[in-house]
Amino acid sequence: MAPTGPRRLLAVDRRHAILERVAEQQSIHIGEFAAELGVSEMTVRRDIARLERDGFLRRTYGGATAHLTRTLELGFNARALEQPAAKRLIGMRGAELVKDATTLFVGIGSTCEQFARFLPSRDDRTVITDSVPLGGLFGTRAGRVVVLGGEVRRDELSCIGPVAAAAVRRYHADVAVLGAAGLSTSVGLTELFDEEAEIHRSMIEQSERVVVLTDSTKMGADEHAVVAPVEAIDVLVTDEHIDGASALELRSRGVEIVIAGSDDRRGADSGAA
Image 1: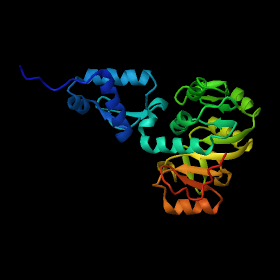
Image 2 (image 1 turned 90 degrees about the horizontal axis):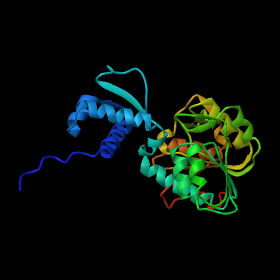
Image 3 (image 1 turned 135 degrees about the vertical axis):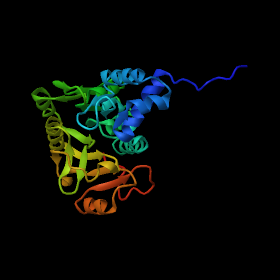
Image 4 (image 1 turned 180 degrees about the vertical axis):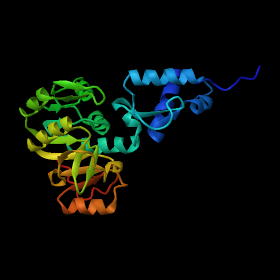
């Protein structure tokens, strides 16, 4: 039998490799990456164009010479590649905490998407969300689902604008479950965009409890759109790498901290809902 050469990657495997590289390095050196995969530069360019078109990547500007390096940012659909194990555990633990709630608001982001996958279905539950993907996910299950509507932000697939802002004010929730673009003891809970921050502020005011799901890489980050001070958070579900000083400060200000994947609930009440 004649010797075989290296196995050529399928297109789906090449694109997954591109997403992993972007998650790690935020850039692709097209020539080097093509050589690693044993394909042409044009093949890599076509794969990147397809990933951009499908919403898995988006271009950013600046950085190195465009024909050598393309700086890219993960779109919503691919963000689960960042801290995937932590997000899965956080989502699972958050779903455990609020499983008895009958009215839930669930915000945007890949950690909230993990939460949605683990939340048990209930006929008597209403879920309100500003996330189009989560509306679709919840819509396949028992219970009532309300997607806020209005304009949809293409990159985040979130409902924004005056229609969404008016719609959210019609609802009261047992629990608001939110992700975070940033969480710091000085600024509080922050988002990337003002429109999403406005929606989440409204829902915090209209909810009995607020549960924030975020991995420790978001701790200390301050994005420009402030959602709420840390005192508005009842429970923070995060991973074991949370900074000790931050955890101590958050607890001193009334935030209950649950470490996902740990038997030590650090004072968390399993009846958080």
